[in-house]
Length: 345
Image 1 (cartoon, rainbow, N blue to C red):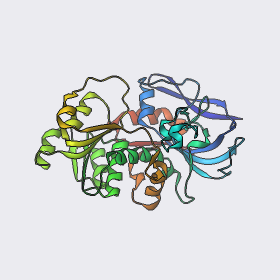
Image 2 (image 1 turned 90 degrees about the horizontal axis):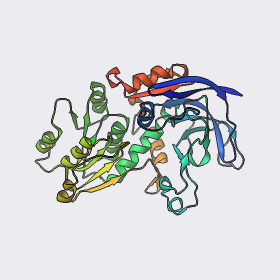
Image 3 (image 1 turned 30 degrees about the vertical axis):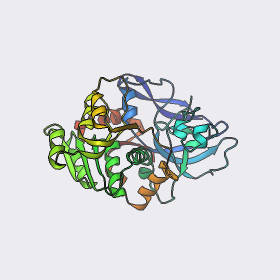
Image 4 (image 1 turned 180 degrees about the vertical axis):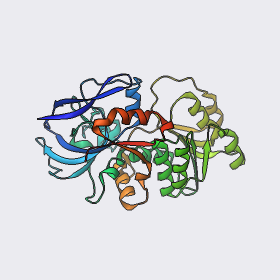
């Protein structure tokens, strides 16, 4: 069978092609793709910062309906509504056995040598597939993956109801970090933004402080609102040396900084701030278990319960046939974009 798939064809170029539909091999599931978000990592590939496949469609912020099962798949049925992680894992190595499957020794792509969410049908390994509630919309389902990323980042801070949390960056992951922190009941939140749509969204998500970095010095603002102490935890979602250094200047001494940005090249940063502040710096790698449940399970519950109104982030919708325009809009935040969805319903 043939299907449509969006393939990178060069820097800032993506186009629709007719390709063979992959039937699921052993351990894989074929999903009729319904809605897929354009991730920041997709934009890194679009701009050539990360590798591009010129043969297979990318796309991992996706959801759809199971239409075929490969040999050995027993946990899913035809017709299941599902969301997809961005990687597969073996389930048997030491990291998988201890619930840290995001660090799997044998971690691989969710659709290796097959098509992802920017195609009419997505081939996914069963290990990265999660069932969704029947009444969850496809739009909500396509937002589970980025919310799971953000949920893990907030969990990695260790923040509780007595802590203050600052978030660097007003994109999808930053906004979902804010929403997750608010849902967790942290004491006070701050988020930095660059664009008006990001500020308006952060306001609706319950931010206590919204700092536009275009006209406000973040360090001075934080000094003022914290009496010079800083925030208990900072999550850096943007990348770049300047944002790492900003995180270090606004976290309190012995506070926590979590890095969840896509760092695609080496950086020159001021490490002396770590020595003098005794801050704890850690990374947050996609999702796994945070406590007794997976980050995907937590994200599904947050959306299904209404604790996080995830659909507030979606600003633009395009059919698959218009994916080139969808990428152009997503890449240009002056367009008013926060999250752009490619829809195939």
